[in-house]
Image (cartoon, rainbow, N blue to C red; front, side, top):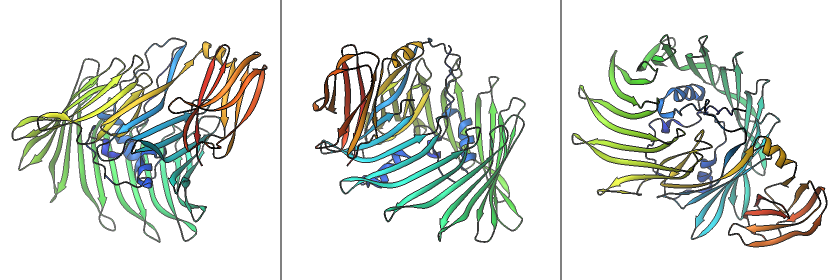
Length: 509
């Protein structure tokens, strides 16, 4: 069976449009601010559908399509396990991921290292339907010695598994209170035709923003219009329109802003050119000033023989001339994940070192270490934070962290006929997980055996024995109590004569 790679879902913010942009984070962050590192998969930003579409076309967000890569019938699936991120401006953070039996993300636990101790910051938990769609995401933050509710999102899908509505609630006064919601409308091809957001005000839903989209027969975005609710009616706010060449490449983009009862005024114009392989060669941005288009930004792109972006030069228009601003060189691993991004800034008529991002990979295209360096006093150092792009699972999947160093470990899962044979041996699950007081460890074994079940702390020390002795074929349940265990992550391990199985358990009190 050939395994087809997933298309990357571009759900990143506009700050990443320029690639590895330096991000300086405030030194004193509260727990509520820290949880921004663990945002849900959907957001409520105005004109988000439009912004995501534009980002998906940008070469800086492009990952080489690996759909034709041959992978053996029995292959390994890789999921993030633990990520430790070091930052210049904040304490180190640790991200701990747990998954359902179907390999969907179950929990994301964020901890912060305070004087050598890992302390809980937040926990985000998910539930899914049978198609793998997220039904709920709930975020809790550590306050006053326990995890306290902060927010939760609920999603409803149409028959094509597209999000139809979402509802965001905040925990206020020991109860869930509506905050905002969004409603999508799609065409038969699954493209968004309209998107309505509402805010919960005065114990009722009130209109907030409304977006309308049109497409050509190939699915290219033609127009995107946004309106805002002014209390008694919709007011036009902005609109974007796009044209394409015969190959479907975006050539011109026009942005306008509503300035009167019936008047649209030009705001920004984008111009694109391409090579014979349909790779973007240039981008020219122009501002509308005093009734004329005035140069603003210019990007020039170059590619290697495989179609990977290899060089980017950006310029700004200053005093009737283009002035160099930034140059970046890109290098890749064998799977298409970025290995190095070398950045230089234009200073005093010459290119000078600016930043350098480096990713180390294992043999399966998983980033094991990501680093961001900046050039300071003639040396590469860690005095600023940057956006760390972490590629994994044969460099197909991508996630982002902010800091100067990220170290990542993974869970590997055998997929294929061998996995089916293995799954008939046993299953080992904990529910509920996280554990606040008591939970149930369930194990299913295929044959009579001697076995033991133990709990280990993150340092590998055994802290509790759940069971030790003979166990018969079939399903068995064991009660686990948080008891004297402090809040944090633990490993539950099932050990028998022929195998061992481990799962992560999160204790939250």
